Amino acid sequence: MSGGVRARRRAVFVDRDGTLNRELVETLARPEQLDLVPGAGEALAALREAGFAVVVVTNQSAIARGELDHERLARVHAALAERVEQDGGRIDLFLACPHHESDGLAPYRRTCACRKPRPGMLLEAAQRLDLDLTRSWLVGDALRDLAAARAVGARTVLVATGKGASEMERAKKEGGAPDVFVPDLVAAVRAILAEAQGK
Ligand SMILES: [Mg+2]
Ligand SMILES: [Zn+2]
Image 1 (tube, protein in one colour):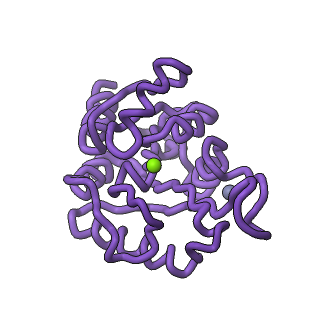
Image 2: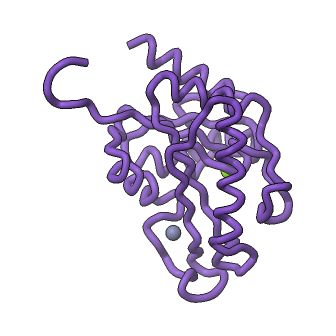
């Protein structure tokens, strides 16, 4: 990459629950509950090495419902960042939507711009990290994750972990299929890097 203008960075947006860590029945509110999917840290390390920014984008309406607060969420994310760093990866930014349209209490009970399928978190990350969204990807286990990415021109990977397998079945009937469907985050990163290196 030569010339005076530095190219904007590419990112991989990663959903949290069901994609990066095992989705729990209860709200993930304590670091001890964290259970990363196998190989997640190494996969994020490979993205970092290839020059991608890694951004976690997560809907956390548990905050609106009063099951979680920002402080506990920050502790969980600090622990998650540390786990990933132990494997050589780095999460450049965590963004969480605390809102819900109809559940919970003010000020979090409202229609916001950030709850996926809306793309607010992706747009915020793009501004803060100077990202090229059309050369970026999102990995998630829900069709609403993919919709947020599609809204900003990013490409989409659906993983079969979490809700992903049933979401793929739903996409076959209702539409909204991903660009790529793979078993898990490790396979998602492999697919993204294969595509990136092919260009
Ligand atoms: Mg999820
Ligand atoms: Zn929100």
